[in-house]
Image (cartoon, rainbow, N blue to C red):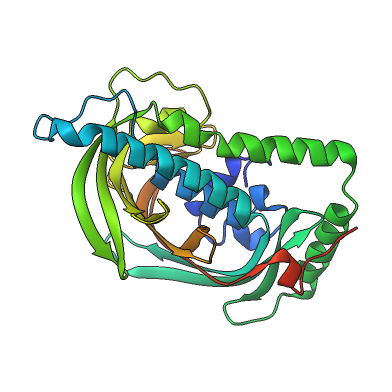
Length: 315
């Protein structure tokens, strides 16, 4: 959904741009995480997560046992706190990301496929994306040159640039508090997932909700389910679905109804939950003309704390 006008919102557009488009990630201008494909994944997580959080003041389904309402609200509140802690803790980890980008024709047949493997490292506390390979090949000389230039720029980041970056990072995380007002919730029950006991919730948009942040406009157009770990309230799995089409990237892309997102997370210790796999299947209309169907699969591995990571860099 997401590198347009070099802003956070515009970065969502490349999810649906063709791999040969000059605006696409094939041009590969590496930047900090909030301007790279890793930020694409983060925004996708936001979309998925926004479809599964629930308003504390929402009215529960009539079939729900009223005696369970206080417990459900407690679970949701603890889950939000756990999610915030995990987001903060993730900034101390390096990891490897594999991005499989498949473009389909109107019959659902594969038209093109691109696979990027990147190593996400930390440079003076900021995340940086290093391209390891594309379609099994090492970066070209031009790509490596751009990587090196971006690396040096971030390594010598000015105090003013750092302030701006951190401000954007905080803004990007503010959605957690906002979505508590954007959805109504219903506790569906309990389920064992990946060997762990979970609570399962269903979410629907809260009628009359007025968006405050930049993500809020999405909230009325998505719904989904959330699996919460019973022991530490971490998110184990998130499923989201677009129920109403919406525009992104200054109306360059319009995400169509029926687009789906599935996020699976893993516990790396100390109740820190991080993405393990993120699947997106959706369709969009670009510039109101070209329709695209996309299957995007992000997988994450080799999480290491910064102190243990051989690729972390300080000034």
